[in-house]
Amino acid sequence: MIIALRTAQPADYAGTEHVTREAFWNYYVPGCNEHYLLHIMRGSPSFIPELDVVAVHGGRIVGNIVYAASVIRTDDGKEYEVLGMGPIAVLPEYQRRGIGRRMIGYTKDRAREMGFRAIFLYGDPDYYSRCGFVPAETLGIRTADNMCAAALQACELQRDSLSGLKGRYVEAAVYHMDEKRAAEFDRHFPAKKKLSGTPSQKRFQQIAAMRKKPDTPL
Image (tube, rainbow, N blue to C red; front, side, top):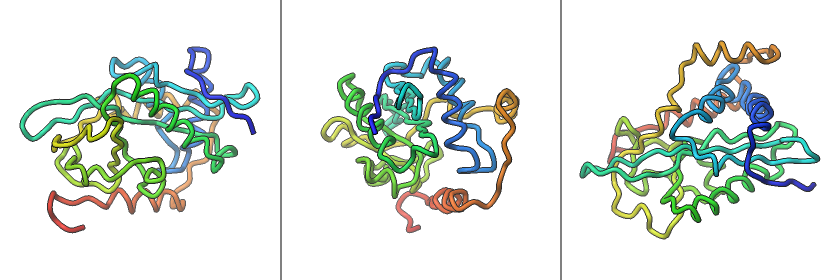
């Protein structure tokens, strides 16, 4: 299967929102909001258009990855720009074919060339450890509310680029979306059934609960 990766264009936006909705529907919660997040991200000042990349098969968009500028707020009061990844989506029928990892690798190389220090995300450690990410806690980085979270993953883009930057990861404000507006946005899409208690939702709840105060055991 030949999958081409390229920078997204405005004509691709509707297609990528469809892909994102299909990929996330009932995955973390009943329904999803990630397609709305993608929609508003592209109008946010923190959005990095050069890292908005689509995966294409036979002229059809089957995957998309995006990033927003975020910061590390160190314990000594300084701030350092980093990237927040996501959403990253692949159509369900194209998943488990390495497309997500290809998009991550492609954009990591591009972000490194652009001079970015590191990438952060909230996701399943089992998957992202295979993509070069490590628990942010091991680098001295906590969540914005000063917790160590298993879901918070980091990838240095330059050698030792996070060395000594102990502090909190503060993601771009656009990630904190209005769920009511997300629900209104979803009404523009074909109706889909919402399901509860799926295996992926149970896994998400398990990982989300893996939080602790600094220097305390889980």
